[in-house]
Each structure stands twice: as structure tokens, then as C-alpha cells.
Image 1 (spheres, rainbow, N blue to C red):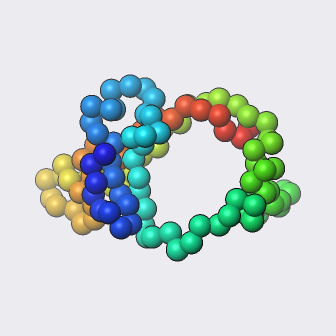
Image 2: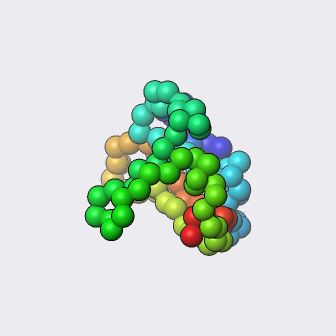
Length: 109
């Protein structure tokens, strides 16, 4: 990993690891705006789905794990990806092309 900042952790995927359609978890880019203040124990974690939805709901971590699963491929890219390659310097972390990744795996369906 190419470390851009240590705290909070921002690191980009090494270019040689971007040659596959799928990016391994071990080299998946890290993008963080700030430090995590404290970790929530999984037994206490709750995900709330609310706002412009028909049925607002709340899930525990175990309930999330019990949801039906599907396999799909997704592309994720940091919006600052490539900023160090611009002719005019841009502020922020000096991402080259390592803020891009392809994921394939199980997700809630």
C-alpha cells in the first residue's frame, strides 16, 4: 500500500495490484476523513434505514448477517483519484491511480 496519511489512514492500492478485475481485500484502498473515535461492539451495533423509504427499519449485526445474499461486482473510486496527475496542483491527498478498486462478493440482496 502507498500510505498518503497515517492518521487518519489514507492509502492507495499499488498499481501492480490493479491489473485484475477484482481487488483483493488486503490491498483495497483506504479513504478516511477523520479518526474513528471509538469502536462499537458488534452486539450493540444497529443500522438504521430511514428517510425517504416506505418502511424505516433497524437491524442488528446478526440480523444483517442473516439477510439473503447475492453476488455482484461493484466499482468504487475515490473522487480525488488522480489529483496528483493534474497539470494544476489540487489540494488534498496526492492520489495517483490507486483510489480505484473493483469488488465482487456477497452483499445483502
